[in-house]
Length: 38
Length: 225
Image (tube, rainbow over all chains, first blue to last red; front, side):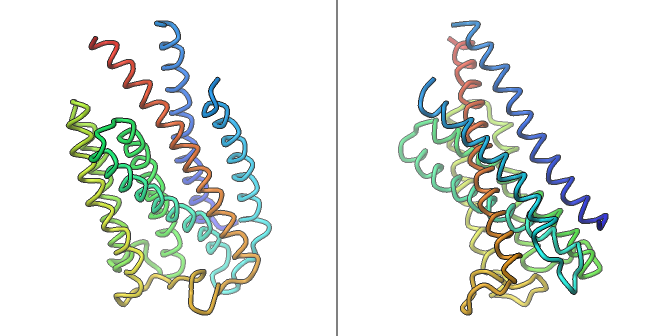
């Protein structure tokens, strides 16, 4: 496997994956706070 | 659970399956380019990311107009989510393009019209995200960012036509051409499946982000009430 190509795929996966995880975590925190105050 | 909440996990599952299938196609199904070798495989996520960035910025453009007409902040949430996601996809487009450029042209970057216009787009939406972070009052933030979102979108057609209007190193379109697609079948199917997968990924991430922004807005209103 070509190193540059592997870096490109890993970079893309980490970038999109980190954004997804961050939003999932924030949604979970905000939902539980919202349920707690209702 | 309402109809929209039920659809999000289905969209998420469909996106996850598509991402796995797309990764398999990129490495095992698509034939290796005889001239460029394995580095040509960055072409699939590069084009998919560029496509989704265009969709995301088109959504910013449309919902920004709708916000200015209706003054409904739910359109602003879609604009904010799409701009962030579009910026992220443009970042990946640039990095993947630079990797390919280094292997094929011998340099990571050149001030070519296509590359430069994409960099300008990236800077425009970076300033959009920065503007949103600095303006606190929601209606004012929505109004300013709607104007910037509409103006910034003007760069998207410039990017698309840059390879036709100016002399450029960037490859010409290989799918939408007068003589039909100019790719071997395995490459074309992988490319089209990548575009489909990244489109799903955009809608899934955008819905997720809009949900987060709406809950943040509800929380802010409770605190200020």
